[in-house]
Image 1: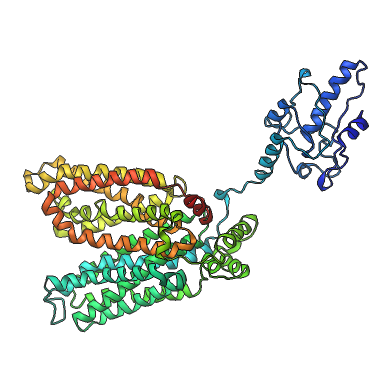
Image 2: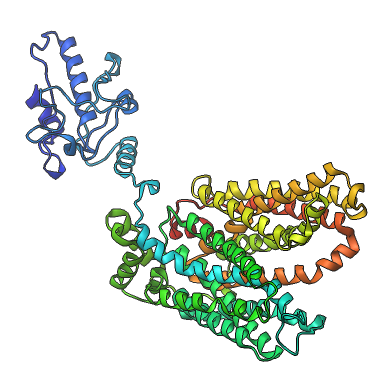
Length: 605
C-alpha cells in the first residue's frame, strides 16, 4: 500500500532534501474493500496534511484544522523523517496544538492527489500565509542600543534645549536690562518699539531660517550639517548678546540666535526620526519636547539667579554659548542621516555604515537588512522635491496633516491661557509677590505631563493621545470662558472661591492636556509623515507655519481680547479645539511602530 501511494503521488523526495516518507500504515489492514477504501482515504488525507508540498490538496475538514508548516524539518530531531516522531507516531500540526488528531469523515471520500503542477488556491494561500508568518518580526521586541541611539538623539535635542532657554530668559533679561538700577548701560530706557524689537528679533530670525530651510538650504545641507550651522548661529548670537555695546548689536545678536532656532527646529525632528529605531521614535521625539520645556525651566532659574544684579542680563544671555559649542562638537561625531545619504546617491555600504553607527551593536539581523533594503529601494537616487512638489496629489494628505497640527498647536489657546495664568492664580489666593512662581509651577507641571506623553506615545499611539488631549483642552477653555467674567469683574473677597478654584483646575487641565497632545506629538508627526523626497521642504513649511502662526497670534491676541472680551476669546479657542478634533479624527493616521518607509506608503497611496 505504501508503494502504491508513493507511485500515485509521484513524489519521493520533497524540496530541500526532506523525506516525504510520511505515510504511516497500521499493521493488519482490513481485508474488505470498504475498509480498504476507508483506510486509503484516512492515510492519504494524513499524507496531504503533513507533507509541505503544493502537489497535495487536503480535504476541506483538514484544511480547516491543520496548519501546513513549510519548513517542518527544522523541528524534526536528527535522523527522524518529517511527519514522524522519534517513536514512529505521526507528527500532527494543528491549530488546536500538539496531540490533536483531526480525522477525515468516511463520507468525505478519498481525493486523488494532483499529479501536475497546479496547486489548490486555498492551500497555496494557506502555505503563503504560514510561510510569511513563520518568523514574525515584532517591532516591540527589537533590541535598542541605548548608548548609540542616545548619542544620536541627545545632541539634536540640545538644539531644542537652547530654544527653550531663549523663551525662559527673555522676560527676565529684558526686565534687568530696562531697569536703571541693574541695566549697567546708558540706553536702558526702552520705548515700546525698542522693547518689541528685542523680544521679537529671535522670532524674526526663526521665521527667516525656516523659510530658507524650506526652499532648498535644508535639503542641500542635510540635517546633520544644518544642526551644525544652527550651533554656530547659537554661539554667535549668544556671544553677541552678552557683549552688546548698543541696542542695535543686541537686536542683531537676538536675530542671529533666532536663525539658530529656526534651523535647529527644522533639522532636529528630521534627524531623530530618520535615525531612531521605529520602536522608540515616538518616545525620543517626545523627550525632545521635554528638552524644550527643560530649557524654559532653566531659563526661569537663570532669571532668578541674576535678579537684582547689575548687568545680570549679559551673563544670562551669553550662558548658552558653551552649550552651543557642545552641540557643534557632538554633531561632528555623528554621521549624516542614512536616508538623506541614500537620497543623495550614496552607496549601500555608506548607508549601512551610517545606520550601524546610530543603531550600535544591535544593527544586525534580518530586520536591519530589511530596513537597509527599504531605504535603498525608496530613497536611493530619488530626486529631491521642492516647495512646488508639496502640492502634488500624492503629497497633499501628509502636507495637510503636518501643517494642520502645527497650526492648531498655536490657535487653540496656548498663548492666552499662559498669558492670564498668573491672574487666575492670584484670584485663587496665590501671592503675586513671589515673582516667577506661577511660571515655575506651570513649567514643572508641563515637564511632568511631557513625561506622561513619553511613556505612552509608543504604546497608546499618537492618534489616541491627540484626540484625548484636545478633548480635554476643549473642556478646559470652555470652563475658563465660563469663569473669566467673574474673575475679570471681581476682586479680592468678591470673587467666588469655587469659580477661582475651577479656573485654576482648568489651567492645569489645559496645560497637561496640551503637553500630552499638541506639545510633543505635533512635531513627532511632522518628523515622520512626509515622504523622503519632500521631507526637508515639508518640515520647513511646517516650521514656518508654526513660527508664523505664533507671531500672528501674539500680535493680534490683544485685539481679539478687546473685541470679544476674555470670555469670548476662550470660547473662540474652545471652538477651534472642536475644529481640531474633527480634523485629527478624519485625517491623522496611527504611525506607532512603523518605519518611515511604511508610513510613506500609507500616507501617499
